[in-house]
Length: 403
Ligand code: ASP
Image 1 (cartoon, rainbow, N blue to C red):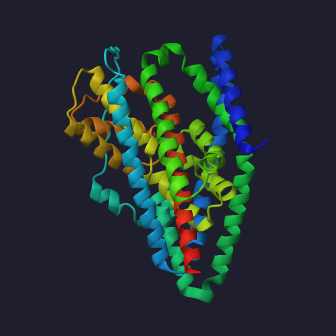
Image 2 (image 1 turned 90 degrees about the horizontal axis):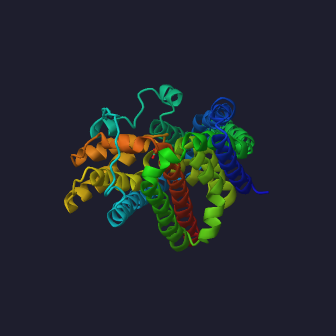
Image 3 (image 1 turned 90 degrees about the vertical axis):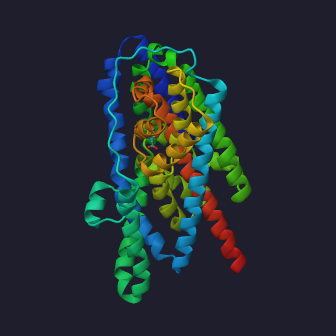
């Protein structure tokens, strides 16, 4: 069986066991016995992120002979991410307008929500440059790690012969990290199984039913966005059969789905794109860590749906201009937030604030956020991979044309 199939079997078996356990009222088994195995899997893949990204990005950057190539790849990547994010949130707004998931709904909630302080734009941009790269590595600050690794890789090239031992070290280290990733990825079917069981047992019909429209809309939106945007981009720009793309990226999509963290899924995304979709190390090691941080199409899509849902529940009509503000704020905030579990909910505070919607609205959806986050993260991860495939194909075509 292929890894993706095994992960899928793990997922389905997890759902089935979760249903059985919750019917039997044995949720404690899920929480106390099965959950720790899921946590173990998350810890294992998280362990890989920093060393894997650091080593592969240094190697990737050092193999780029001219710096203009790196800036070209960077430009394409950021351009692709911006476009797909804008499309995602627009799809969300359109779907929520058509299907009006919050109209006529009255959910009583005694939860209140505290808005979080978010840094301003200037600080966010300045923060990309680490003052202490070791600290950046220790904190797992992805953008800072990217900047530092690019400097090291590029300068390794400029230094030439004297940097050979360091280059060999990083080469070897990257290979070792790939091997460790391969081993940990083989545990993914069990990890996914262990992660999904407690999610199913803790989300019974009483929690899900009142919000079933929002949940369905999120899942349908994620599927529409993925098929249309990624399917078209891989077909038209990368000239790759979309079926091959979705199959190849499946291990990453499923691990993203069950871990709810696109940063955590990064090692799996890197390996899947390289092994199954032939994306070069140079492109995947740059495009994917960047994507895990700045590209969150699923989160953006969700903002469109959730903001309008909250407005509808409170009986507030948003003007076209306000809906446009939702699109803009949602897109920008999703770029500024890292791919960690629940990030989409924090972004929602900014979006609601931008159009003056009550922040308590967050409490309406917070109870099922895990279920929504799964669809968001699967989309985020698939979107990152589609960018890697697209950028890689255009670079390869360019090289062929020049040769
Ligand atoms: N959990 C998502 C991710 O890691 C972010 C979100 O909450 O939407 O990509």
